[in-house]
Length: 282
Image 1 (cartoon, rainbow, N blue to C red):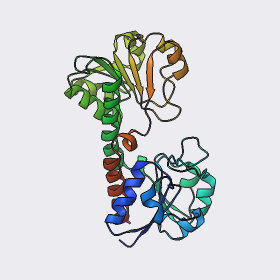
Image 2: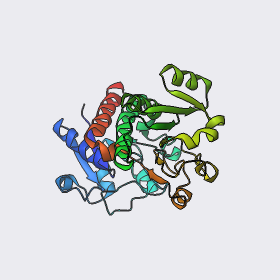
Image 3: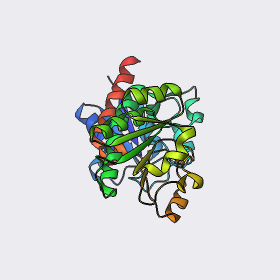
Image 4: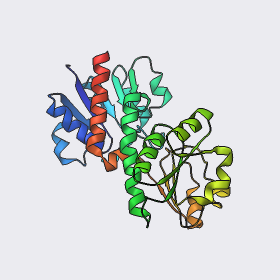
């Protein structure tokens, strides 16, 4: 594999990815990572130079948090998505949650990590572990024996439910599809259909939400007990009315990008292995 990588923006996942690529003998350039001293000798003075020296661009997961600028918490640079898009034309680009305008650019090969099943499943492991870590730190009782609701039975919901069950929690899972509800029952959790959610909300000590729409609105938050902990794992804009939860004095944590915060080396390994699989397939 003779590929040169540009690492642009991102969190500790991409910092560790850069180190792994170097260890594997690849050439890298970096941009919008100037707060990482050990990568400064690979930094370029401009985005244009960074891209010109590369074959493959790897950027943030998610690529942007606000839809305007590249997610670059380890930089003071305000790099717009549009500028990155224009400079990256003709290149391979890999990142997470890439806007459709970039995906549809026929001059580029674009790969969204979050749409690649092998990556998404592995990433769910780190997300679930990070969510449990938060719950253990923030909830004053043991998770074992607690009534815990997992909202949304996708990849993260499945992995999280299994881990919680293994810790002795009483696991309840919300879903809408009959197929998911059947699986929830088969796995030994208690299924709750969305239509029955309201009548059950007051029973839970901890609620993990994976649904990226406003599902825990004012009406439903009024049903949650004050002592409960809500850990919202949903991407922007989240699934909880955070301001109202604060008014109700319900402890709520919006936990985004957990793999990069809680398990940056494992998360980087997932990215690296996915990149290598993409390269080998093409």
